[in-house]
Image 1 (cartoon, rainbow, N blue to C red):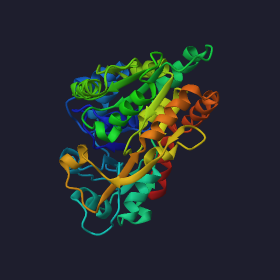
Image 2 (cartoon, rainbow, N blue to C red; image 1 turned 120 degrees about the vertical axis):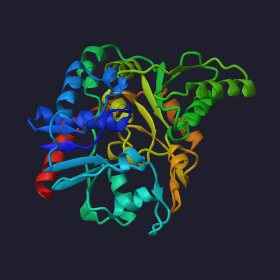
Image 3 (cartoon, rainbow, N blue to C red; image 1 turned 90 degrees about the horizontal axis):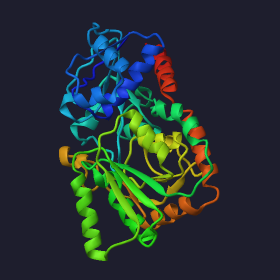
Image 4 (spheres, helix red, strand yellow; image 1 turned 30 degrees about the vertical axis):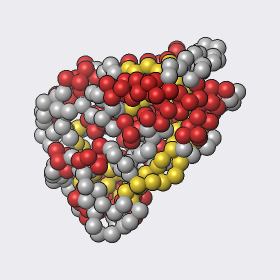
Length: 373
């Protein structure tokens, strides 16, 4: 039996990933329990009736003391959770690396390096950060995540049509952390490259609560540089998994000039949807992305700027992440619109995504638990 010491009172990536992994294990016949909690209305809206019934069942199942799992994170509701299993595991993801590696880490990284739980890094990048920080290599394993399975289910009925021009470029962001997702760079590069082209549209899907910040940014650009023909549309609407799958499959390309990512399921979702993807070739997404299956955006390493992490955590040891080159973003945007090979590149991306299903993640977790127990 596997117990996830994770609550569902908040709708975030932790809850979403935990639900996907727990549901996959459940289908494989593994008994599951989760921390009893209220269920966020958004979690309920995003889940199927079956998933909501499973959550209720798991919350009413006595916690196993055999295998227990939680998230390693600086948020106190997650950081302070205790694991009391015979084998304790912590899922770990990080969006930046450290230019210095001394013992003077913030409380989160210090704890991740020194506590007795085995770490499940979601990417080789995240594992390397932990090891460089001092975590013993035998105390951390890589367990990549999976993409939205509804994308695969809808792909064949939806994609059997003539190849078309790129008209809709999708960018996924969160207005709570726009700088990390590179939304400012996405807008700037798109505006500079397509300001006189009314045929191409940038769709910004915001998963946060402050879309007015994005709208204000667009207004300021037009005040400074004047009106432009190309369209930039903001989508602040909450979307469940089925609606997100539909959004990906309705797009023609995907843009992700991020500064830091620990894994980025949203980019893997774009791969699964068979989209040509322009993205920063840095961090966690290099677990599945390479020069053959996407359009790499060049970058340089710089100190981490203003982001959600620096607002709520005093990060030490000189954290660094990527600063995408705007000219490179423009060049790769132009390529995904005009490159006659973009469909072959996108097909390679889709084939790569098939290696990162939740079933593969669950099977790797089971093998690891048997090995460590």
